[in-house]
Image 1 (cartoon, rainbow, N blue to C red):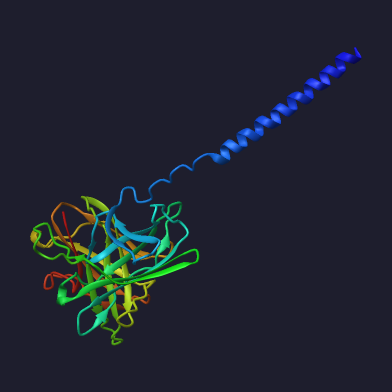
Image 2 (image 1 turned 90 degrees about the vertical axis):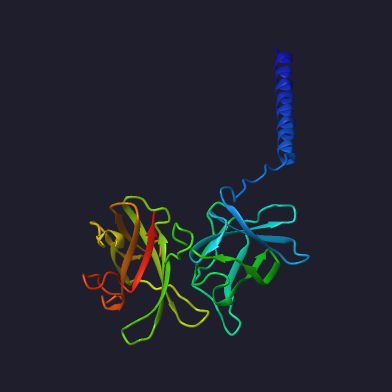
Length: 302
């Protein structure tokens, strides 16, 4: 009986020892596993342009859904990768757009670059006032990034900003407008259409940005204004549509939101009146039998 108990204890010790060895082996195997390749954060986006400096260990690449920059609102994404093609998810980036018109230079409304949640991707937007070549101007990006203890700058990288046309491909479409307030302040505001990008018959969310031009390089976003909305079809006796909602400031998304109702396909003027937080008109006018359009409007055609 005593011998059996001793044998049982030996068997238990051997079993525990075996388990410890196997556990250690499995742990080592896990440590030696090759890391799985990260999902490409740019999947579904189209590359626009690469930026780098000679000898730099990193390349910055510009993307968006359309593969181009255009006059008016343009959302962009930046990805930064090392020389082995590994995407960096802990970088900080800044980008400053500037147009050189020879006798003068100016920037345009744009946002800071922010990290996209859960991806090695960084997003921003620009409201380009002009297209490349307009007034013989050339657009440039000044980029700066930091990865760990590496900081680099890419200066005067030329970019191509394209014009925006109506479906005929020839007539410019109004998607951004710079106006001077009529209240005597002489403040200049930039009003930019964001959505609808792909309009449809019926109710569409309409969004826009308003920026104030403080100087050639400074365009802070403006909150708590209002854009009164009156969509019209000039080719159809300038009729409007029901159930439209003025654009007001959405503090969560930090953009102006409203509703535009297209009762049919075709060419629409989205007539607007810009008002401050007190309801005072800063620019634009009501549509009437004598005045078929506001001095402030966007164009949509589909």
